Image (cartoon, rainbow, N blue to C red; front, side):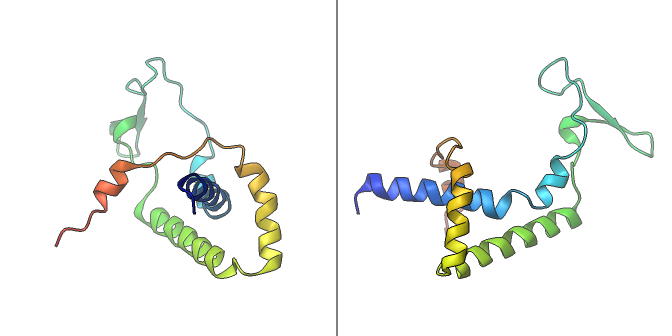
Length: 123
């Protein structure tokens, strides 16, 4: 397989899996709600006042807790698993074509070298 074909297929698959397995999960409820106004542009002027009266800078606020993170990761893993075990099913493949019509309009992915460095196994 030519490198350009490999890259094109990998890009399409990455966008499709992101669309089908990550979008429309618990991530959507984390994304819902009001977005705070920032005049600085970097949210350094935004604070959260909690029930104990602490004024917490926006950049230091956890936007979801460990239980929500665990639930989100389970949901995404289950969807990725389902995607992989269903990829031979003609009905499932027909659905992927519909979703790809949307995901195909997204920006092209880029190689994440920071990710590759972070997962490097060194015994």
